[in-house]
Image (cartoon, rainbow, N blue to C red; front, side):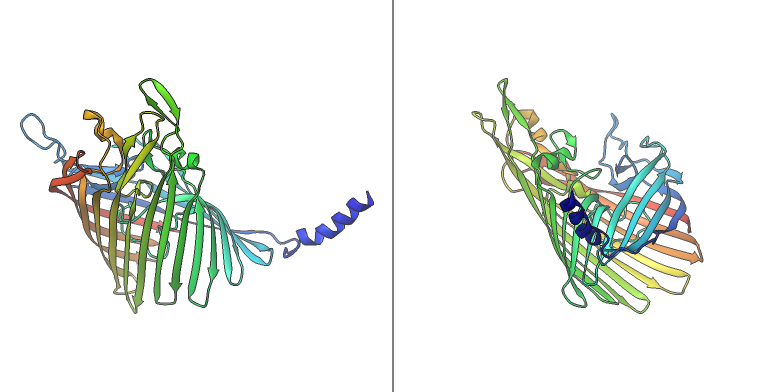
Length: 421
C-alpha cells in the first residue's frame, strides 16, 4: 500500500505537467450559408453521390443517332450551409492545444437523389510546440495541401485536376528552420476510398493493414509557399480467389506510388497557384487511373497486378482590384496513361479485371474565369466553366490503351450568394 501511494505521488506531477489549473477551452463558431443558380449545356458525370460535377458525360446515342446526354439543365441549389466549431484550450505537455469540429448541412441535389443530411468534414485535435506540431483526427489528406488549393466557385474544388480527400490521420510536422518544414502523415481511408473488385471500399486498405504514408517537405514565407511530396498506398484487393470451384486464401498486396509538387506566389494584389501530380491508382483521391489483374495462378489463386498512371495539375490566377472585387482564372488538365503490363484475358469479362475511375477518358481539361464581389459578410460571385472530356476506345488486349478519343464539352454558368459568419 505504501509503495502504491508513493508511486501515485510521483506520477501526479507528471500527469498534470504543462496543464493550467481551472483553465477552460474556448469555442468560436464560424461558417456560411450559400445558394447557387447553375446552368449546364450538357449532362455531367458526378462524384460523391452527385454532389460534385466532374466533366461531361460520354455520348450515348438513341435509335436515331441522337446524343441522349446532349441535354441542357438548370438548377437552383441550396446545398451547403457550413458550421465550424474552433476550439482553443489550455497548454498540455508544454504545447498549445486546439481542435476543429466541422460539418455541412447538405440539401438534396435532386438529380442524384441525395437526401438532406449532415456531412462530416473535420474532427481533429492539434498540439503545437515551438518547433513542431501533432495533428490527430479527420482532416484533409496531405495531398490536398490546404495552403494551395483551387478556390473555384464550383463545389468540386478543382477535381479531377487536383486531389480531393479527407481521412483519419496522425500528422507530425517539424520545423527545420524559419521557413522549411518536414511533415510525415499516416492515414487510413474512410469515405474517400479506392475502387476495387467489390466497388468503392476502404476494406482494401484495412485488410492490407499498412497505413497510407505521406512524406512532405515544404517552405512557407509571407509571399511564397512551395512543397514536394511522396505518397505510398498499399492495398489488398482480394481476401480470397475462386478457381474451378476451389477457393484459396489471398493476401497479395498492391503498392502504389504518387508524387506531388506545388507553389503559391503572392505579389501585391496578384497571386498565382500551381500544382501537379503524377502517380498510380489514385481513385481514392477522386482522380483517374487504377489497377488491373495481369495473372491468376491456377494452382494457388495468387494474383498479380499492373497499374496505370495519371497526371493532373492546375494553375490559378487571382487579381484583387479593390477591397471588394477579385478576379480569378482557373485552368486544369488531366491525362490517363496505359497500364504497365498486359491485362489478364478472360473473354468478354476482361474489362472486369480493371478497377479504377474514368478509365475510358483519355484526357480532360477545364478553363474557368470567375469574379467575386464581397461586402462585409456578404459575397456575390459568378463563374463560367468550360470543361472537356475526351472519351476513346479502350483496347483491353493491349494494356488498356485508349485510342480514337473524341472531345465532348460542357458549358456551365454559376451565380452564387454566400453569407459568412
